[in-house]
Length: 295
Image 1 (tube, rainbow, N blue to C red):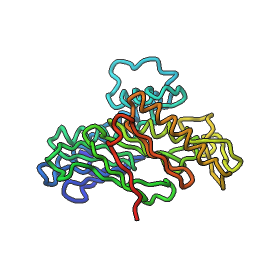
Image 2 (cartoon, helix red, strand yellow; image 1 turned 90 degrees about the horizontal axis):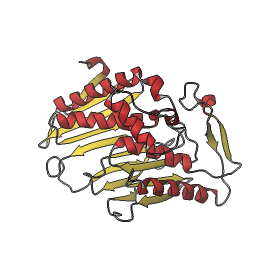
Image 3 (cartoon, helix red, strand yellow; image 1 turned 135 degrees about the horizontal axis):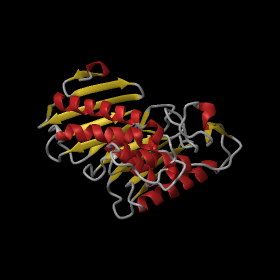
Image 4 (cartoon, rainbow, N blue to C red; image 1 turned 180 degrees about the vertical axis):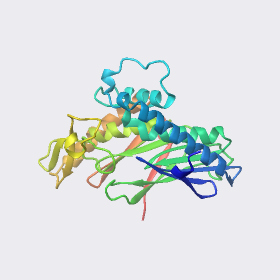
């Protein structure tokens, strides 16, 4: 057991603060807090962290240099790699999906332990398993959205009407723990799992870009010496954009989101650039989620 690496902060709720992981796990069964399942999720998270550390050299490779997965590759490492490969962007590394994948495996472990409601929030990359009619009295799941990663304030509500199909979301953009090549203040992607959402949110946020003198960029290693995307240009800061620039960046991001929807990788995305918002959904299933501004 890894008691020193996580804490049961209340019945059915476990908090992990270990290395790069800052995660909250919640588990219920028949409407009651289910601490044992939450602890099982925490143990699985630490296993995935250990596996990722062993395979770190592999995970830092661009996927264009990964021809196949060797026998015996841990499931979590395999899932990260497969999610990123779906993007068809060769300079991405599997680490683009590490946070979402870890959340997925936490939820999987809690469900396997008997939880009918399991939710893992890994720094804003969220995965869940909900048995309809068991632990939620509503026919939807509501979570908060941020429109600016640097601000960190919840500005919108996201109402997920089909939490059996959409089972993960992730947010990327300028600020926070990761680097971006775009100028989106936040992009949230919704997908069948958090692993795919994580990779997709990163790709869509990268695509939110246009040429503007107010955008300052540099090499990734200038901002983070240990980055896995050395040699690539990333955004350092964004000043006052010219008229129309935010709209151009949003349009580029929306096109990328639509491509990923067409691949079946995501169900939709919510994009924010310079205070402007755009929602992209599947045309056939536009009723899967709703977004509303908070008062």
